[in-house]
Image (cartoon, rainbow, N blue to C red; front, top):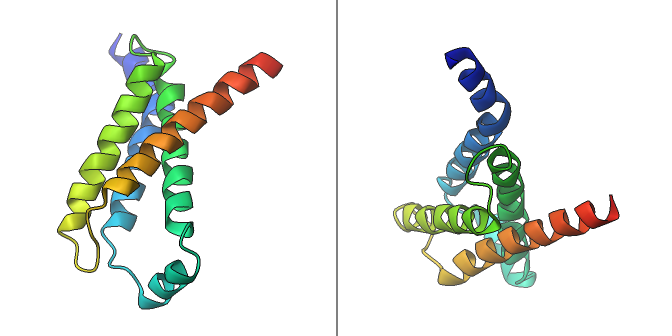
Length: 125
């Protein structure tokens, strides 16, 4: 029983945990002046990054949750957005970073778009 559970955790949840750690790592980095300047020229870029990163997180959570009792789309969106919120709180304490409610909205949008893409993929498949 324990061996099967460990195998399940490694196969389905380890990618989620690694993705969360990766987001945390990059969120801990102060903004590099060159990238901040680029962001001013292309205003939508940071928000597209949030959408893409959190869509990826939603995909990994969906994959893992699909094989557990918590496989609802609500749970995927809620957990992805909640992590986005905690990430913004974390960024508040990182020099050069700020808490931005719009980022949380983009994280939510990324999760929703990921689930829409999954739904469309299942219909075509």
